[in-house]
Image (tube, rainbow, N blue to C red; front, side, top):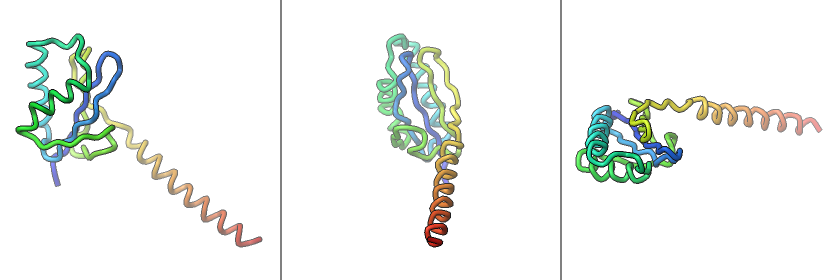
Length: 128
């Protein structure tokens, strides 16, 4: 149960911030982040803004209304209800980022394949 979502920032140099997860924030969390960034861009602009600094500023402002935790990437937390949104500083736009579940699926499939290989090896080792 929850209303999980995550956001992160990417700057013009390609640096990405840690991912900010919220278990209960839902789309309201994203809207609050959008509102904060709009206010910041109207007053300061983003020409030299770094992804990590923007993440820290966002946490500082949103912490009063939302619980949050950090992850190094989208796989380190749970955003299963609403997904992950990336703010591209240079373009001043948000995009929903759906990391390929196949990455996790690939790992699980590889684990399954490795287990199958182990079983085959054990079976043939027993024939010697």
